[in-house]
Image (cartoon, rainbow, N blue to C red; front, side, top):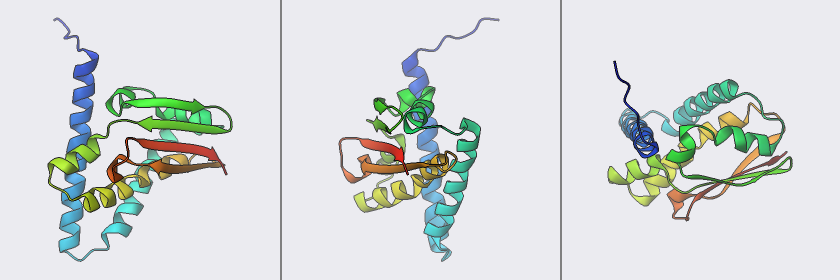
Length: 159
C-alpha cells in the first residue's frame, strides 16, 4: 500500500476548506437562531468561549505572552492563517494573521461588511477562551481583517 504525499499547499488548502465549512455552519446556525428569537449573541459568546477554553486546556497554560504566541502559531493553522510572529517575549506577544478563511467564507456567502464584523466578533470569543487558560495574560485585537484592516493583529500582554 502506498502513501500519498501532500504538498504544504494542499494541506493548507484542505485546512482552509475545513475552516470555511465551520464558518458556513456557524453562519447558518446564527441565522436559524435569529429566526427563532433566540438571544444569538449571548448563546454564541457562551458556546464559543467554552470551545476556546477547551482548546486552551488542551494547549496548556502559557507562562508569558511570548510563549502563548508560540503555542498558538504552531501546526497547520500557521500556514492556513498566514501567521507572522512579530514579537514573542516575556512581556508581549504579537501575531499577525494575513488571511482568514472564516472571513473569506462569510464574504462568499454574501454577508455584508457589518455581518462579517459581527460574526468575527463572536468567533473571537474562542480566542478569549483560549487565553483564559493562561492566568495573567490579556488579549487585544488592534487590527481586524473583518473590519477592513490589512491583517488581524493579536496582541497578548500581561494583565
